[in-house]
Image (cartoon, rainbow, N blue to C red; front, side, top):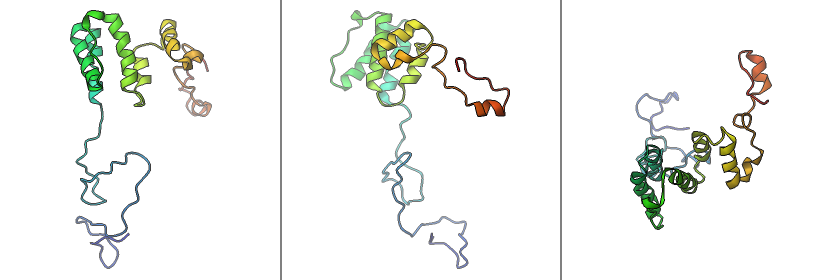
Length: 174
């Protein structure tokens, strides 16, 4: 690599460096931001904000309000998400706490599909902790048919890791 501020002896000065060689190729892993706000290829600061949580997920705080018994307050937040997609609003009069809970679970699956949230939601809702929750999942997703309560929620710990540390205990069912 050749830097604009490299000394004759090849030592890079401690001052700011400007790369004058061939531009870096696009990396095909991690986040590829196509960021036009960077001033140099070595400037890893960015004017683009990374999404940590989506607005729709913030609006689905309605789930917490519903669990607190504030169903009528939760419905307008659900409707903001629906309106954004051009869907008709739902009416608070048609939902009680239980029915809105079930509706929002389905809505989260639709709205956040492909974003890696489902497993965490299913765990948070406790659907993998009892047969009734598991049966509910199976009615909507046959992939849970082979799920075994008390076993399938956790992966087995490799025997090599157990052999190295006798304090490590195998997960139940393995």
